[in-house]
Length: 143
View 1 (cartoon, helix red, strand yellow):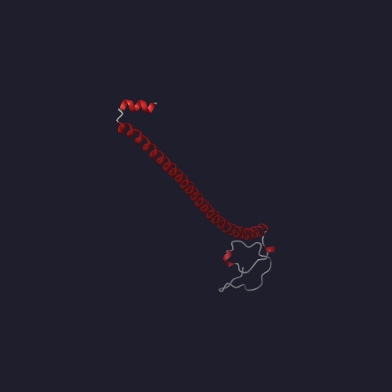
View 2 (cartoon, rainbow, N blue to C red):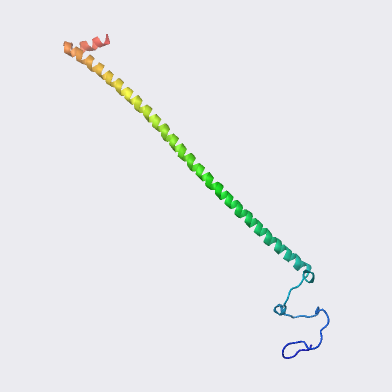
């Protein structure tokens, strides 16, 4: 091995360097062609490139799907809120109708009770005004 103070080869070099050992990778410079690399290294590089491309494609698909789903979820949420509002309004309207019907029935019953009370008051007052006693009045009401 021929070396000098500036680590330059003096003379000539022949061979492919296949028997060289204990070399640091930091001393390597330049590019190696695929033909100079072992097959498993080339295959690993191809897999890595495929994985990078696949990851980019999947990420783009996920982002597009997510954006599409987000819009659909927003539309669905809006529709559900509208349905709930409509149902609440329908229930309110139904309850208002039932309340109006109850008030009408109550007013009708109130009128009937007032009429009945008036008839009863008149029938009680008439025997008293004629001077009929309580026992006789009961028999006259019974017929």
